[in-house]
Image (cartoon, rainbow, N blue to C red):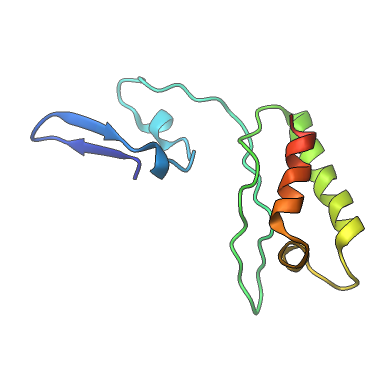
Length: 110
């Protein structure tokens, strides 16, 4: 929904705040006017079950596979250091603080 086409006035508008980096603009452009970079978007803290929580993207789109592994390793180490027995990652993030985890992730992905 980031792009709006006004066929009557033959205009195209783009709202960067609505962009979710799905890549549809690249795939669907009939004039191939958009170029995309393949990457990975990681979401953290999602939960499925009795309490459904949608994960949050706390890092930029990662274009290097090694950065994906760094982010996953960081999440596992952080969870091991802060998580309690039988606690889900989402609950640990809520208890300890999303900012704490995001700061650690940012340090690793510089």
